Length: 355
Ligand code: F6P
Image (cartoon, rainbow, N blue to C red):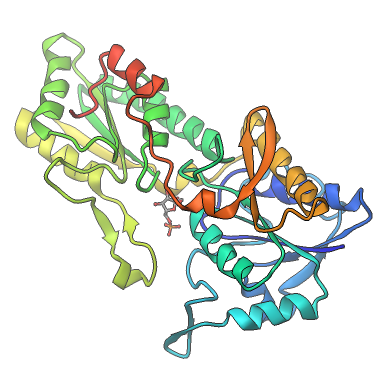
């Protein structure tokens, strides 16, 4: 067996651990693994496809990022070339067979899954591994990278507590997560934030401002608000840094925490500051949990190839890794369930969720 592996979409802690597991699990079966750099772009230039041996993946389990590089622009089905957008997917398919590959492991989020699905429909024998700090991929219990991002956000929120308390300020902290509030909810509850705003619960600004003001009335004199980048007011849109047209792909969210801070300041007269944690959440060493999870995902992807379970994603169904049609991962987005235990816990802790 000759297996190609790539990483696509935004980086997430644990990508390297998946790559290492794929290489080890394949080598132990006498199979060979080849890395494709920067999504599918490696196929388009010399040296962009190269062997990966256990020697070469030594010590990478704990490393953030991806040794293969990644891209989140330019799907091969809508590729920017000579000022136009063209479908170069057949070129990629030809390269796959020219390299005599038997299977492809695509590690990525929903965007990468959609591209992989299109290649599967063209007959490529592929298996997907779900990655994203956002935890929004459906049909799997949790994606690797999420827990590390939550830890990084929680650590930052802990540090901002002493700052906010010293200055008697309201801190509005924006975290990634795209259209889902998983990171905001988990880090906000863990760091005992006072206000958590999620895309799943459009917020009422009067309620948010009152919750912040209540902190001063009860003598706490500071407040911490965690704002998911996709959070938006009841009667308003999500805040975007760049829209679809400007970017040529999915819009880029950002800037809502700054708006919320300004609105709270206007309504309460209190000093507020905002901070966007942004890409910081995508970096750093994966937590032990994410390493173990990522290694299991990678090893299971090779088992899927062994069983010829192509067209699937590896899905974590604790305690098992199972294989599900990749369409299950992308048919729906995995939003935070509003009747979930953590939402209920947040409300019981007196955290304002903006509603
Ligand atoms: O999907 C991961 C993610 O980090 C989102 O949380 C965020 O909205 C997006 O990627 C940002 O992407 P970019 O790398 O284009 O800034």
